Length: 187
Length: 248
Image 1: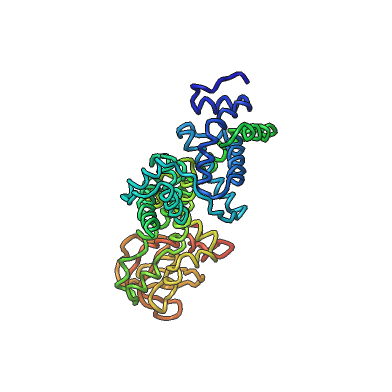
Image 2: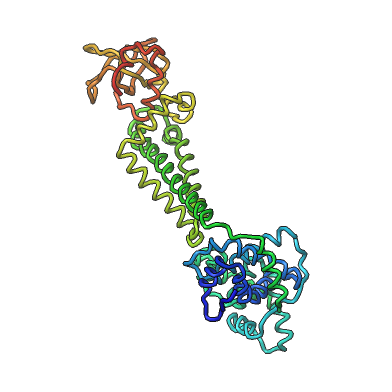
């Protein structure tokens, strides 16, 4: 494999991977950390379980490369696969929540807090724990949208494509997630 | 976070795998679209029969029968076709939702689309006479089921209550003869001139009163509406009755 991934778009990498298996490595390199962080956040599992799930995700992505809809953003498509794979892995393994602290970025936490008009003049470590605790006790459907919006920084359209729900439903879910998160944060 | 070891493991695992060929995904898409379109078409056919029933259900005769309004409505409603239409609207919703971009549309939007499409297709089918044709075929070929489908058949098989449904078999000056679905022949006396010409073999409905066994006085003659095909079952198996040779 002599190709260089630098400067190649996701769609070009898809075409390349279909011609040459080794080129799939570029897609793995590009997305492994993002997907890993996403899986950790929405599953509340530890490193090893998240790594196992991520492996399954990439194998599924590879198997379904010919199903990639060029009208979609590639990142939305692979996040969708990750989301669906997490759901089936969770059902299969019936993973007991390990109550691991969610890997949350401080800037993103600030964004979440200010967006929801919540008091944040507390120690950063305590803030992180409070936010993590509040998110982890939300219903799954609210957790998903909050994590996608604030920690994966997805747009409404991208969230619609990832969750396979109408954009209006996503907006409505986010509104409800907002009030639920506020309640949990304050208790 | 995840190092080269993870990447190597992925490459190792996909070595023995191949991406699913594009044609399989395309075939799945075509199947879903085809089934969705088929559901809409069948829904359209059901809708055309429903429109035929609603437009020819004899709603105007309600005041001249001894039924309460609710009872008449419940007896006249073509439940079977309402259920069939509902099933195929839901089927169309399911298949549309499972197309590649179906998730972008809300449940109400897809259901409304399915209902409107069925009604439009049903309207076109009705104009082409499909509703009547389906009703006639079902009545003729599936009489046991049809009697269950069309509650009006029972309603119009009550000469004691002044309601009769049958084929005209013979025409005389002041009266005519009618073969009902039980293969009983009635002599029918006319109170007034029929609203349309009577023809041998033509199905009609009568409102009136039973005089004796096999004699009926008709106050009103009505077009047959749904159930005409069912009347063909009044014909004897050898088909020798003159009313049974007439063109439909």
